[in-house]
Image 1 (cartoon, rainbow, N blue to C red):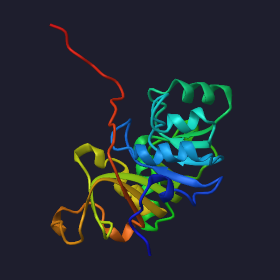
Image 2 (tube, rainbow, N blue to C red):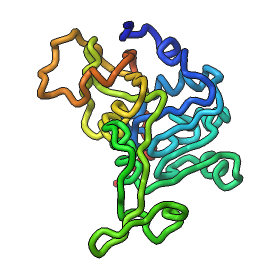
Image 3 (cartoon, helix red, strand yellow):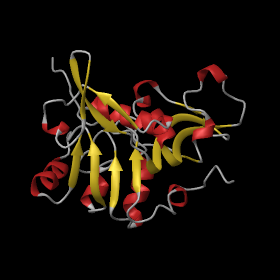
Length: 230
């Protein structure tokens, strides 16, 4: 099986219209920006995207929003994206907003093969409407189902040719759980190493979860720049 791809376009070439994809990152930190750009240039449409937020207007998943390639967004934060807000309020985009911990756990459960779990987050709010609520001890919990995807697009600082990945600090965020929850996981890495180069104790995502690797430079834009005067 081919694991290392020559281009981002080649790595995502078989993602079809209507696919469900998970996209790693938090804000613009740890996003697979080049894989997203390849998707934005591909013409793929009708996507269901599972991600913490939807980038900014001109970068990250904001590029797919601008092109009307996303049919449904499952996330926890509208973020700095005004087009996301506009499409949500106008009804152009189907959106499922979740508590952030619930989103992370639904993805983790999907990767672990756990079909559902109970959580207190969202009880007594519109999130719990139409869902099973069960009482454990003195507290009510709402049933949440696991999330999986046809493809997971993730980013790591380093990868080896067997697909083992190492993330850089907070860029780890949603990437490891999404790697496990995708039927096909495509990892964008900044550095590609030979198999055996990593200390096994330092590996964050084992290669068994990664089907494709592609490497290249990244812009690493800042979502909101804050400066101090004086």
